Image (cartoon, rainbow, N blue to C red):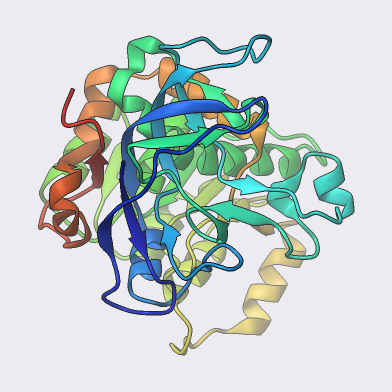
Length: 352
């Protein structure tokens, strides 16, 4: 089989590699890879900023946003050949910590977790892969190739869950949400916000192209102005922050409605200084009972929530989110940003 591999820590090492077909272990599914999404984490690994190969190995199979079709499944697994599935990314640490022991491995406390395609476990960027049934999530067959969006949607399903849990420390009935950043994470966060019946606003810097169109088709409102102006005018009850831009993060934090909840999903780049009136931020958060919470990764229930949210979404809208599909043989093109890219996917099955 062909697989997309690299040597973590070595820039320029990404290549297509011929590997032996995998043999499923006891109880595992053998899955035909259909597609793998490309995100910022993949690009950081390719640029040697991140990533770990499996122990005793130099190279890692890339890819954590998966979609596959079950080829073989053991009896009693809950899956049958032909089922569409995605593989969960993270695995609990072997200790395990208290969170991992309770299947909350997205909140691992000791950092000894592993991740498919990222940290010490081969990913899903291969024509064949194996997965334990406990870490496979069924995809509605009607979604077809759009099932590759389950993993990024799981990230925002968790974010919305965190917002709800924080808000419910007291009476919580949000009406208006602001999503900062109209990349895949931001747009999928907006989608779930609309599904919850909220008035959703999305802020991004571009003024033309697919992003404003996708927001409009979602029934949300698109903004391209300064975050201070937009947020102060809206006074959102909830902010889902998906850019990681420091100035924007603090501006959003300072312009919510009282009892506002800000959920940070974007990872900031280090080394950039931001001028912040820390005393004002503290004063506002205390006097308004505001909360800022970080959220990353997802566990099994978030994948299932994501699969349900996608199954309920408009198929044409989801299809518009995937702006480029690149065949495996042309994988390098997927890592070069296009002017109108939103979501780029590598197809693994020759376009079948």
